[in-house]
Every structure is written in structure tokens, then in C-alpha cells.
Amino acid sequence: LLLHRTSISIIGCGHVGTACAYALLQNHLSRELILIDESEDRAKGEALDLRHAVPLGMPVKISVGTYKDAAASAIVILTAGPQEKFSGSRFNHMESNVSIVRECAAKLMAEGFNGVLLLVTNPVDVLTFIAQKESGLPVGQVIGTGTLIDSERLRSMIGTRLKVDARSVQITVIGEHGDSSVAVWNTAQVAGIPLELYPGAKSLPSREELLKAVHEAGPEVAHLKGNTCYAIASCVTRICEAILRDERSVLVVSTLLTGQYGLRDVCLSTPCVIGASGVETVLELHLDEAEHKALHHSAGLLQDAIAQLKK
Ligand SMILES: NC(=O)c1ccc[n+]([C@@H]2O[C@H](COP(=O)([O-])OP(=O)(O)OC[C@H]3O[C@@H](n4cnc5c(N)ncnc54)[C@H](O)[C@@H]3O)[C@@H](O)[C@H]2O)c1
Image (cartoon, rainbow, N blue to C red; front, side):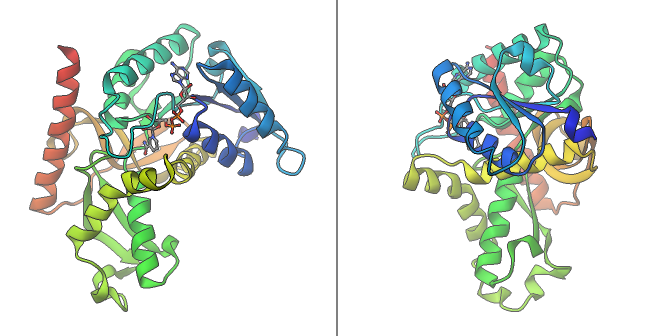
């Protein structure tokens, strides 16, 4: 029932926004999808193309909307802003993307938004922090996709190497969605078997090499095809599913820390219980000393970026 009363809005209909729209459409997660883009023609064109997919797919109403429409949605997904070039950093468009996020959050709040705001635009952890402060929404209602994608990439790499379904591989990556993310190796297992004991695990690249490959994955894809969109769309879809079905699933996402790991005033990823009101509980993993240090380093980079903005 909940599903049929909800709409999802997507602000930014570029590669990521439209891949999200298509994934949400195929998964029948809401009865209505509302698209907004700076270019109204682009939003119109994408809405039409998606609407033409409905007869052979799912009965979803797809429209181009306003901020008033978006504010009535259960979830607003923010993907507006250009993708960094493959050789660039996720921080490349920070100033302009901060302006976009401030503007979108202000417009949504002016229309009385009280749903979950899901940030995708990079640098996603900095923008999640800005969106939470700017909107004044309860902390749990502002979520960044964070290192869910880094974790999925690592699961995919390990599953491919071990010739086992990546869904049977567990490993959590936390911290900044970016070059300082931290793989928590005591969470690594295949169907309950500690990763290092799984048949063939000895042939895996070293932990350092695997994490480096995760850090390089986004730029590698963008170098080859000009953007990345499907993996992030599946992360967005999974988070929306947990919210709309009030699942209380544990997913690793970016959220404002309030003392976890000894950190506060920074958004970064850690496993969180996700239900109808967004992040309902922020969980802490057991980290070894090196991981703890690496997480604090990751948080420091994000705090420096935020401090730089305030000047
Ligand atoms: N968090 C992640 O893991 C992840 C993964 C992939 C991409 N991204 C990020 O997602 C963002 C979008 O990437 P993309 O490939 O879709 O870029 P894109 O250039 O294809 O699309 C961006 C869209 O945003 C629109 N836009 C710009 N300003 C706007 C505004 N003020 N209001 C409404 N729409 C606006 C543009 O018209 C364009 O359609 C980038 O910041 C990229 O880095 C994040």
C-alpha cells in the first residue's frame, strides 16, 4: 500500500538521473516519477522516452515537475551537476555543486518538503553535509549514497575473481566516497566463510591492491565510456527500496556523524539501518587500529573541504 501512495522526484536528468529513473521504473518502486532539470527540454525528452517504456513495463506515471511537486514526494534524489572528467577529482565542481545543492534544498524547503533527500552529486559527502545544514531536515532524512557503490564495486571484483556470485560476497567500505575510503576487512566473507578461508582466496590481489582498484573504479569507467551511471543507479534504487518498504535494512550510506568512531560534524559512510524515515540508526563497525586511523584521515579530508567552503 505504501508503495502506491508514493512518488519519487529526481532533480538532474543527466546520465545518473536518467539511469536512476529507468532503474526505479523497472523495479516498480513508486507509482509516480517526477523529473526536474535545469534544461526543461531535457527533462521533457527523458520523461517522454521513459513514458514510452511503460506499456511493456510497469504502470508508473512519469512527468516533468516543479519544486512544488517534488516537495510532495517521499524521496527526492539529487543528481544535478556535471560529472567530473575522468582525470579529475570528485572535488572538481565542489563550489558550483554546493550552490546547486543549497538552491535545491532551499526551494524544496520553501515548498514544505518533509521526505528523504538522497544526495548523489559529488563530492557526495560534502554535499550531504551542506544539504542537511541548509534544509534543517532531521539528520536521518538527508542521506548520501556514499560508499555503498564502493562496497558494491569491491564485492563485484572479489566475486568475479573467485568465480562466485557477487551477491554472496560481503565486504563493507566506509568513510569518504573517494580516494580515502576504507575497506573493513573483518567484514569480508563469502556466504559466512571468512574471505581468506574461501577456496581460491589466496590468488586474490592484496588488500591494498583491491582497495586501490576500488578507488580507481569510477575514474576507470568514466575514462572508458565518459560517465558512470548503472552502478550508482542500482545503489539509489536499493536505498529507495529500503525507505519505501520501510525495510530497516542495513546499508552503508553517508550520514551526519554525531560521535560515532569519535567523529562529529562530518558526513561520511558507515552501515545504517534504513527505513521509512531514512537513516534510523547509525551503526559502528569494529575497526582495527589502521582502519580507525584511515577513517579519521578520511573524515579530516572532508572536514577540511567543508571548512574551506565556509571561508
Ligand atoms: N555518488 C556517486 O557515487 C556518483 C556516481 C556517479 C556520478 N555521480 C555524480 O552525479 C552527478 C551527475 O552526473 P551525470 O553524469 O548525471 O552528469 P550530467 O552532466 O550527465 O548531468 C547533470 C544534469 O544536471 C542538470 N543540472 C545542472 N544544474 C542543475 C540545477 N541547478 N537544477 C537542475 N538540474 C541541473 C544538467 O542540466 C544535467 O542534465 C555528478 O556530480 C557526478 O559526479 C556521483
